[in-house]
Image 1 (cartoon, rainbow over the protein chains, first blue to last red):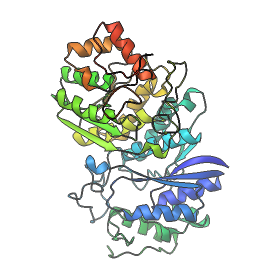
Image 2: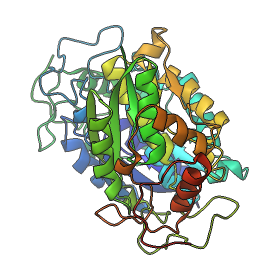
Image 3: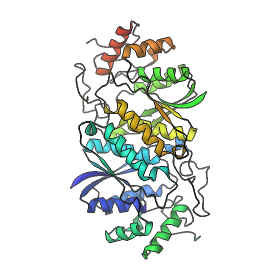
Image 4: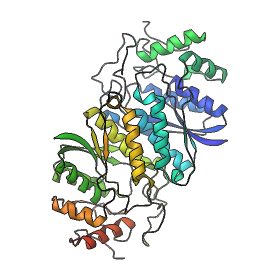
Length: 226
Length: 226
């Protein structure tokens, strides 16, 4: 088994990515960022997922992105939209979040001498997020291979985003086949501390629609229906 | 004046960069990262420098890179070398540090709608640091322009590293001409909490030699002489 750093948010996508990484022969060193997100329940979810899917290590790093604000997820004065998924970049977009998380994953990968980073970026469902696009991920990988001692010495690092063009239904079906227990995950942008989901934010809507399309029972506790 | 995010460590290089950014017509929004560095005196130095050089804002963000270790600056069990500057990547190299810092600067720049980030990277003195090389900085800039809402909308961001190929003596001379008070700065990797410098680590050696070559009086309090 080769070591890999897996960015684990506690949501549905990254849990599936951890299962895929393991199935592909990687030992998962899972990294979760406590960045001041509104939906703190995902942090406990990440720990549950890491344990359930046999991660060899799990670290949660604290980093207060609320100091910059600019997102409904890090600024309590910006409401989470609940009226349905819209076109364009949503207010739940967190400036440079994937770049920051991938950079921290890169640091750990360099210390572990890991040659792989896994991220649950998904360009289909979240087409509005600039830092989920394939061209962005390729550019990050190119930069990362110039940034480190390993890169200088010719040991290439790969950024794997296996879900990049998968619809949510496929993610759920493949994850279910690999034994992912989605009842452990939290997707809701305004989940209660106990992990109950609002049912009406974009993330809840995409999750619910994904389970419906996959024909898999949705284990989520929703407090509202759209 | 245009807004710019300036990475400010509290050392000699980034203080000079702040002065250069201001002289070039930028309002400096200074960002300092408290990453668990051994030489914590540089954090207080950064605050002094920001105030002295008229920064419009200064934020210090906490991020525990000691969780990953792998560097003499973040792992107390790895000694800071004091025998003289060697070839190759030194143990004071912090994995992915510039990538992490630039990513955090990118997040703040996006919220501020700033089109410029300044960093005191210097490829001459620290030729051993992969993330100070020009090709690395160009790759970061390319990635950053794909990562953000501004990038998607065609508002380009530039990563400025004005010291990139300046010898230390030139940095000191130009900074002195711009009124930088280097007595406020701390370079030493094992500075005391009061900011006294060891005089024998790589950073002290390069600093001292820079003042000598510049013909400028070195205001540093060194506790040892090599």
